[in-house]
Image (cartoon, rainbow, N blue to C red; front, side, top):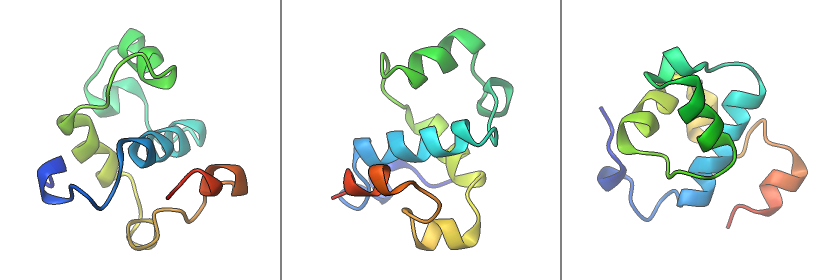
Length: 84
């Protein structure tokens, strides 16, 4: 498993949120896939809670090899403009 500490400085919290929103918005992850409740998923969607390390690791499992190499691939131009 890849933990946040292994990639710290490479992907910001905002970028993780964009990745979460990308996977969630495309229907590629569901609460049970991430091991969380629907309520927790809703809180993540609205930015009420921070994305924890276990969820980060699970999100990585749902990204393709190409998406891992290019975290902005598949994101809208509006989302890309927010990535530093």
